[in-house]
Image (cartoon, rainbow, N blue to C red; front, side):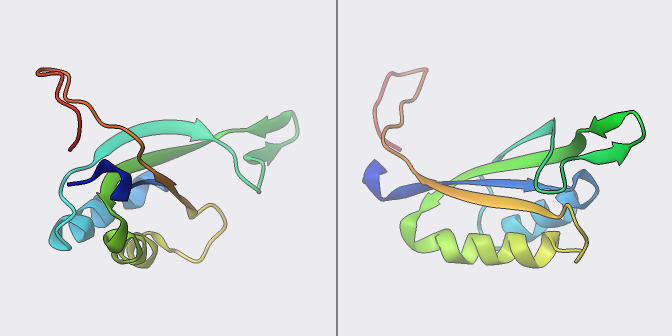
Length: 109
């Protein structure tokens, strides 16, 4: 498989909804992903209180898919992560230029 035809999807979503999104992605045959917890702020600038703004807890799902699968993966994430409230998150898509297997040093996917 040509690495140049692969895309990285980063989905920054609410931590309380992540299990629902992961199950939906796995059902859609997107089983290889990385998940990590982060803190940050988006357009809402975090939680505003009298003493300042505080970052919101979020979870990032990171997956690599074929270019032709991007719209399917994004649709699954949107449908299952959307609550309709501020702070539902963002999805970013970027090209993959190179991939290496650490154990073997092999290049490609």
